Image (cartoon, rainbow, N blue to C red; front, side, top):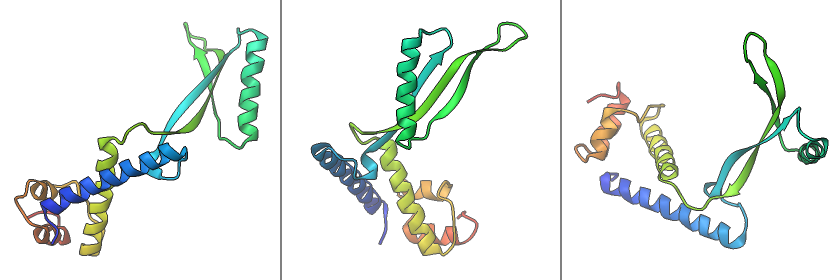
Length: 158
């Protein structure tokens, strides 16, 4: 039987699993588990008034990343003092995957949402949303899981 206590137990189990994976990846220096990886965006700016040796170093770095197959996006750096737009340089952006330092509550909540969404869809037999008053009542321990399933078979109301 699925109830509020098993809901909290699943949530705690997901957090412990993610933290164990993070410890394992940190110890071994790998990024094997998806929950241990954090993605960030880095930028390299090249302005037209920079010195040539600095620009050359940045361009070699960018060319090396392109050679390695990394996707790099390019944007203009512009300035519009009055009616005319002046291009002042170019900004290159690329994504970097790094190892997390800790597991956030948002990660656990997202994983828990996927678990509950899949369980409701499996039990109901159709796609239904979990952003509803019925799930709030279940989390507050006012209704049981069978009532949640019955309400999601209809129009998601009691």
